[in-house]
Amino acid sequence: MPNSAPLSPVLEAVRARIEARSSESRTAYLARLATMRRDMPPRRKLSCGNLAHAAAACSASEKLKIASGSAPNLGIVTSYNDMLSAHQPFETYPAILKAAARELGATAQVAGGVPAMCDGVTQGQPGMELSLFSRDVIAMATAVSLSHNVFDGALMLGVCDKIVPGLVIGAMSFGHLPIAFVPAGPMPSGLPNDEKTRVRQAFASGEAGRDALLEAEMKSYHAPGTCTFYGTANSNQMMMELMGLHVPGTAFIPPGTPLREAMTREAVRLVLARAAEGLGMGEMLDARAFINAMAGLHATGGSTNHLIHLVAMARAAGYRITWEDFADLAKAVPLLARIYPNGSADVNQFQAAGGLAFVTRELIGAGLLFEDVPTLAGQGLSAYAKEPVPGGCGIAYREPPAVSPAPSILRGVADPFSPEGGLALVTGPLGRAIVKTSAVAMDKQSLTAPARVYESPEAFQADFKADAITKDAVIVVRNQGPRANGMPELHSLMPMLGVLQNRGLKIALLTDGRLSGASGKVLSALHLTPEAQEGGPIARLRDGDVITIDSVGGRLEVEMDEAEFARRRPAVSNQPSAGEGLGRELFAGFRAGIGRADEGAAIFWGNDPAPPQS
Image (cartoon, rainbow, N blue to C red; front, side, top):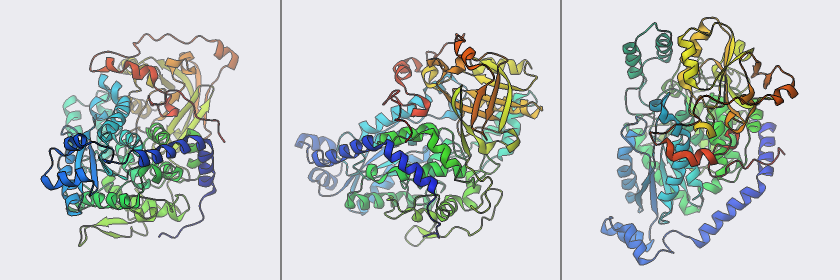
């Protein structure tokens, strides 16, 4: 176990108030799991016909085991498709997992599949309006997959942005079962990130053609495996490690290697071990696990999307976490990693420098993680503070380096990149928004400037192409929230905003939309809530209003008499709130019923607000 300081009082305080505000909902959740375990044990309530259907396609020996309940049966929920690089390796995983189960005297079946869309493909396209909603579809598909009630445990195959949060939310409805999350690992490093950014900005400013842009993008995203920048997908893998849902150290092991296959097989052994103990995922993930995930986001400069997803994931477990919880933890947890877009390194270089094992050891040693927590590994979180390497039985573990060999990528708690975490909450008369500070230079983390207000990304892009933006500005892009059009990511704006900043202008972005873990070096206040569509103050902004975004002081303000601003009528957008085609019309019910961004933007709980801070 790493040498550890006393636990930070900030972590204890955040834990105490989460548990206090969640007492009723968490108690109800645990009671539901106890009822399921008692009244709906796998297979034992099924009729002979039910069991025959469940085992019909199996071998003779497996049919007997499944029908009699004489051996554990594991359900595999997969997000495999061969269009997305991160999910293509999952094609071979079911066979590997089934073979590992057989060797251990158990059985495994593919219980079902979930959709997996890629924001990289839909970025700036109409299909992006389905992206956030896909998380809740995945949660429901996970529930359908496991609803046959023939499984003693489960294995979740997923990596990317909405897929892992959706799998977690769905799995929490079966939290009486032990469940492992099984990733696929990153693709090899491609074009250096600084060069990719340079080409994107050159294309945005007209200095490079489409052929040069396409060549750079193809060199960046070029092989099976997860994209190597530290966006939402790789932040997912960090969180699954720190929540104890992975085989220790599995997050960033490349696909197609003997070590990766060994770790995939090990997931089966660990799920069976937890099943023998009767430890379900829902009971394993208490408030400490979610706080560990939040601490990891701050320490690594993780994705802003998780201030939506992690709220929803916790809610599925009966916990109510708030953006104030994230903000308080940011004051205690330092920034230890510089991974693109927070730096130039990718996750392969981060892994080579010591990776999550190094980060976990440092945070435990500083009292900034709860170490004594239940995990899939059957030990405390210190099991995740070691690096996996090939061993005689497939996997061995070693200590991470005492000092990072690449201090430009990874540092210890004694010498962090910043004494505070990589995410900040800003609040004020305009509402509440999130800033990813880890990607923004210190001299650019606050700005007061006149607003330029746009009703759509396309309207801003037209002004940019017309060279109409020549002065300092806070670029306001509204009607991009969950109720308006599904809260699409606006990452396609970043090259243009970066060009304006490179021209010497002081530029910031304010939006009720998302920008993802790939947000760049421009000060950006994201996920603004209440959104314009529900009458939020952003709908009353006009060109020329002087706005302050101060991520250091936590302020989001407009220089106007409060009463006068409140009297101003919300603008009527000249853009359609949500389009039709490409399936968007099917999600009208989602748009109508979805909750606010700070409540997890989920359809399951609508706009049921959290209890007051306690």
